[in-house]
Length: 261
Image (cartoon, rainbow, N blue to C red; front, side):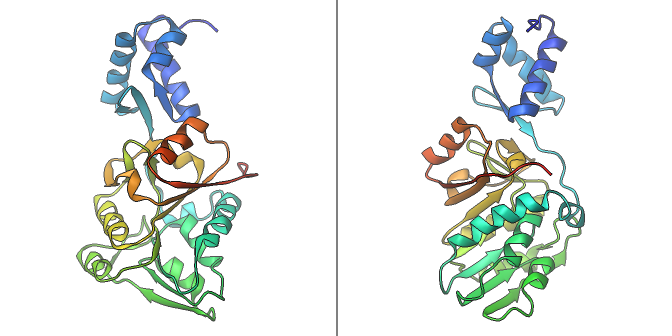
């Protein structure tokens, strides 16, 4: 490999690595390009200032792309999301009160809920409610409020007030971006506040995410990563990344055999 010597060459090298792995470590990049760690840290500061990465201790993370509307996301990677959802519903127990947040992966979870567990589902997402409507053995309650066209869920003061009055035994928050250090983050402040209240109200918190959302960040903080109890993810995520989640107490389920469509 040609050693990137100029700042722009090093920074392109860093951005390429971020695109491929989602995270870079300053010491590792310095060793690969033959520069000092201080030099690489200056490069990272420059890239962060340009909005191209998020600085974290020892390195940097990818900034996840801006969220697209729900109706667009529902058509993306449906088979991958369905396989994740198949594993996620195995975590449910008889009699669970389940909060399912808005999101395309969560809509797949709703479609695959078993009929024989006497479940009560609470949701802020019409798409989730419609996926369950008419199913025998599952009761559905829907949270009111302002319906946000991008997230596909009810947000705002009314929705948050209703969430604060319930105590689900398990919840599936919509996952925008998740990192072991920076935690769960979202693209919209109202959505982040809603998710934070869903998590605070629930006994068990299950994050179900395609690999593009792991080791990334978005602008608004939802919660620390250790507030999540279970993580359901695709194979192909670096072992060090999964180990970081395990060290803070998350029970990890890896779904094998998932490929890009």
